[in-house]
Amino acid sequence: MNSDANHPAPSARRPVIGIVARTAPVTLQGSRLTAALALRSHVAWLSEAGSTPVLLPLLPGTPDLVDGLDALLLPGGPDLDPALYGAPAHPATRAADPDGDRVELAVLRRALEGGLPVLAICRGMQLLNVAHGGTLHQHLREVTGHDGHRPPTGDFTLGRLPLKLLAGSRIADVLDEDEPHTACHHHQAVDRTGAGLTVTATAQDGTVEALEVTGHPFAVGVQWECGHTPDKRLHHALARAAGRVRNTRPDGIGIH
Image (cartoon, rainbow, N blue to C red):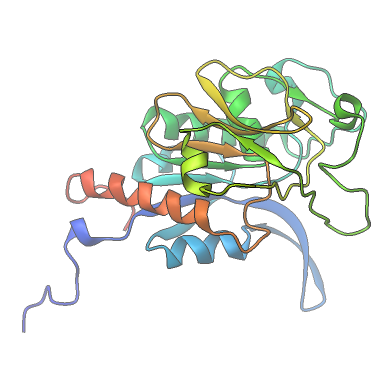
């Protein structure tokens, strides 16, 4: 029997997509623990789209793993440390892990420098903006005068706001619908847009809802909670972009 029969050729390997892990308290079998985790939807949808998701802990050395990836997903999470964009903290800002923020920033920059596809969600989009020299509104209600982007309920309620998409943009191509809406839950947002970024979606109140790295094949940030609704389109688009990267790699390059 051919010993290679059960081992696909390197070119047939599934693309590997790194998902930045979030640190959060959990209760498991009655024990209170702190876990590094990812939303099940991110993992499941990337897998069903033909890729292999791996979790990236925000620890020293993690940026070195990026060279073995085919794409990167930055999920939502807590507020960024305002020192990253040269601002004092607003009373409503809760920066949970400044050291981790800096590791995540290094991971993102390594991915962009390597030309990897990137999907940056909610906080991830804000980090994408900061990585390009942009700034954030630290408490959006003071800018918009309303709580539509983070409805003030006891539960994790999503705000549903109409979107205006930039024609011809990557996000408009992926969503491909006449009346798109956000599904958002955030109290911070893009203020000054970073250099090299294009705003490709806005809410009616002017809030930036999507950014894309100008000239990059696929580096998209969305402010809404992609992963908290049944909409898998952006995950599948990221997996397709990762597959294109995988197919251009020399044999043996990547995480196996």
